[in-house]
Image (cartoon, rainbow, N blue to C red; front, side, top):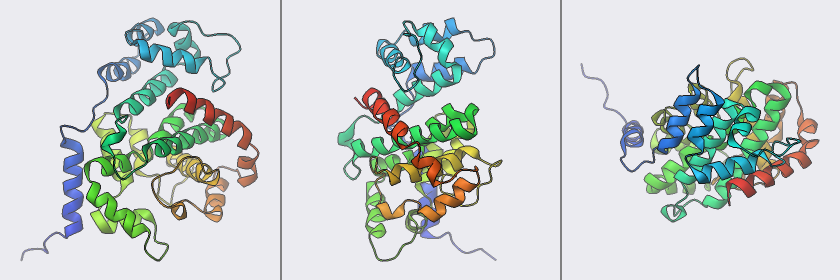
Length: 298
């Protein structure tokens, strides 16, 4: 006896995954960034080797030195060379910063998007990245760099949907404005059989990014996350709430889709934090956010 035929949403999900992974025009990481990710992962790589590779790109060199000398890191002495920056920041931070620069360059063609305000979207993404980094510094310092990138990338699936599946993305946005308080992720599932978090993780898979980042993006809307299970996803959830609370940028979806304070309190409690601990850092967050915007978005 034959089973039931697949539903339309199941077929759509399979099509979107297949297309996301195979579209020839889907941006790949710049060659230098891909080489840098590979080099940093090699046990015998030296700061000299890493700095020589970065110095092949003058724009990347200038950006990295500008950021290393900014209040975002607050080093007491001027950082004059890339090798000095690599030593001070560490391989992981350099990798994550260069990846961030590449991300903005890959999707810098704002004319390709008709349904998403890219300027405000990247402001929101950067706010979540900075917020995730600040929270990580409080509870899990060794994950601060990864938390920044996970926050920056958390909604990248929306960019893929808006650029390559604009009709479906428009339908989702229209449904979000209908009566009721259904979660965006549920409306996405009902409309296309998948969601922006999953689509984003497929893109990161295509880019061969670390599995921790792939999983954090895929799970950043999951309600059941233990502190020991997937810290990055939990950090991103809280950072997303914080960015919405301060109205920094716009995620592309109605504000009603952001976590509410009661949900945020539950998430914060898992890290032994509360809303007052976030509010007490508001000034520092806004300073770091503006500094990061000035460097990354201009």
